[in-house]
Length: 193
Image (cartoon, rainbow, N blue to C red; front, side, top):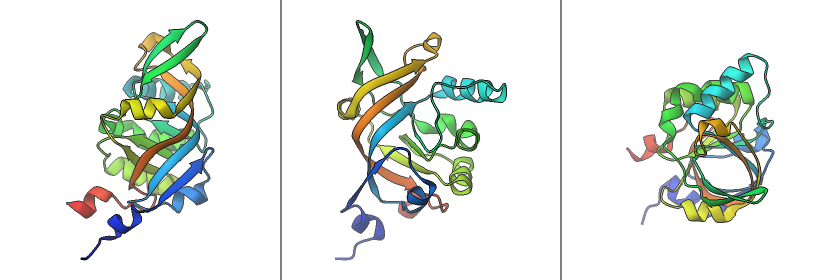
């Protein structure tokens, strides 16, 4: 039986802790299975637009995203007295952020984007140029994701609504994440098409 590079690499997993260095991220290949511990920040369409707009005006966003992880997610959360509890946190379709992703990576120095469905050529070029990767998280696994979220560290822009707000989570062994676009311009979807 003949195995592809992707199938063989999937037999091992890589455990990373934020902040992520450019060197360790550039060492990731398509097909790698990754688990993240540390800080993960969510953003969907509206949060991307606002973060870029605020940054252009010299305003600071919720957290320093440098060498961080961005999760395309609109979590389901509930208020518990003075804190928040995450009920579900499945990935949202990443391609909706395609027009903003490369600028977001450059502006905020993000090292990893997590979502579902993949992204396009602009993102691929941004990942390669600035040393970042895109990872797929399984759609429909919102409860698995929520279990890995240990604490809500903060939230910004609740005026956008809970799913569109920017959430900052502390996570432990968040995954499994499949590297589908690496920092060398490789795209997993090209290898299976």
